[in-house]
Length: 224
Ligand code: 13P
Image 1 (cartoon, helix red, strand yellow):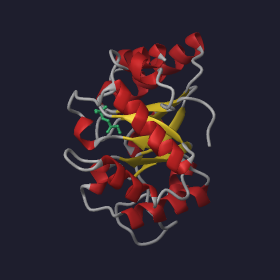
Image 2: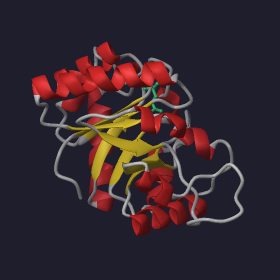
Image 3: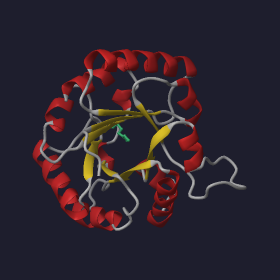
């Protein structure tokens, strides 16, 4: 269990070295000046991790479940740790869509824990699916994890979000089931960040598109 509200940037497959360096420099300056109470985490593509330095935490967007070996194109949790990552996002719906099973995600979480990397474990139902049954099933695999990110799949990158009441009650459902802090993800932006982050059961924000620009990401941080 973590204690601070977490605001994490998931850059997905975006960003150049120059963009990463200037984003990091500006974010560092912002954090030093504003001293936000939240834990700020930036999760760029792997090859940009070493371009980003400053007074924020870093995270990977995935890792492999083995520590090393003949796994072409993969990155281990230990490698993330060596690249100064304190966090890793696991089970993102974009990876589940590519075929990652709950069993595999659970193995990755175990590997991350063994490497000393905190797990942001993503769960979420697709449009038309039953929230409680999908979430309950996915939570069965949330064993070696530190924080949950609830991301309704239909809200990702669409500009649509559940109502504030729905977000709060769904986060309560998740929290009651697993006892962990629950971040919200899915079209979080500077306009809705204040209302969403003020909800009693919301313990953080996982931000995709709106984290790519330093001004919108810092507006979200300021909104909390
Ligand atoms: P958007 O904020 O772009 O909707 O993405 C959310 C997300 O998938 C974060 O992991």
